[in-house]
Amino acid sequence: MAKLTVLTGITTTGTPHLGNYVGAIQPAISASHDPNVAAFYFLADYHALIKCHEPDHVHQSSREIAATWLALGLDTDNAVFYRQSDVPEILELAWILSCVTSKGLMNRSHAYKAAVAANEEKGETDPDKGITMGLFNYPILMAADILMFNAHRVPVGKDQIQHIEMARDIAGRFNHIYGQHFVLPEAVIGEDTSILNGLDGRKMSKSYNNTIPLFLPEKKFRKLIMKIKTNSLEPGEPKQTEGCTLFSIYKAFATNEQVDEVRKSYAEGIAWGEMKQLLFEHLNHHLRESRDRYDELMQQPDKVEKILQQGAEKARTYSIPLLKEIRQAVGIRQITDLG
Ligand code: TRP
Image (cartoon, rainbow, N blue to C red; front, side, top):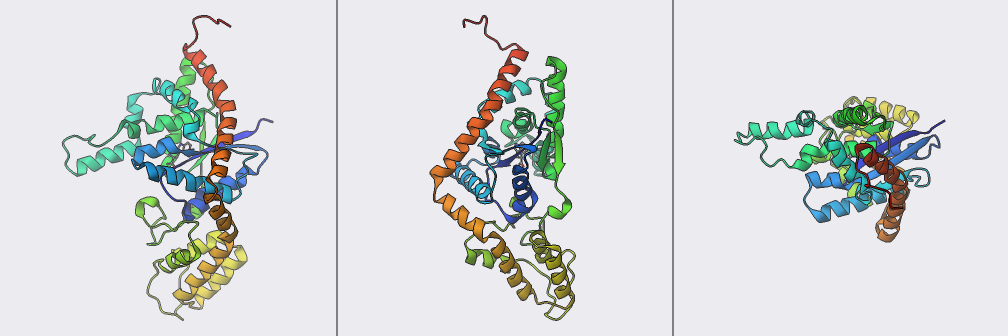
């Protein structure tokens, strides 16, 4: 039976945090060990340029994300792990796709509409003020990422569903004009239980600046855990697990029995300080070994670079023939074959 192709990209603009780990990284890494899945995971560094014009930041983020995924045990024999920018066929495909994508479809993109709405709210006379073509074309580049490897399933956050639908639309349009070449991808959305709250109790997200990085030095890590917002119930007063950030994070890393224990402690009025200490120790125990591997990999940039380059080589065994087929299909061909 043909393998199921699963593909996802990680934009290289930040440092991986606990929310990324629970929602995206951990499930992706376990899928990388599944022999029935052809997994493609990549650093979406060209996507990073849409949001970030700080070269060192983009570079550092790529390095951290690569080291994180490797430290957590990504199976790079089974999965293809690469950097988008190392696979130039993706950008060529993006252009070809842009020629079958209606501008109206892009006008409806949430990311673009949100930027326009922000301008209108500020009373700008030009609704497109400060909006780049990169932002506008973002869904086409993402479609190229996905269609290049004929991915069946694309695990993403809820905010990305529309982009996967657009990739389907674009694939369908291309197939309609030029014949059947692309698989229509489907989004796979993580369960709601995999969404963690951040320091301030809102969803843990880079844009809220409330994240807890996955691999911090132990002391700093503890300090951040101690900063998580709680209510002001005193020790001894029974507490609700529902909606409690400490509990939600603990739960994402614990067995059912451990969760039941902690539920009991809440009912018995565990002090917030004590719960924070417990959470810290639990997470620290869980992450310690991979953090050591992470620190090591951050000291060995050559090793990480080599793995990424090998990944790109593997990725290109797919992308080069596919792009050749696509160019042929659209009429970008040599006049004659000179042999
Ligand atoms: N845009 C995605 C995000 O911000 C990252 C991404 C880029 C992606 N290309 C992709 C995800 C292709 C899935 C498939 O989360």
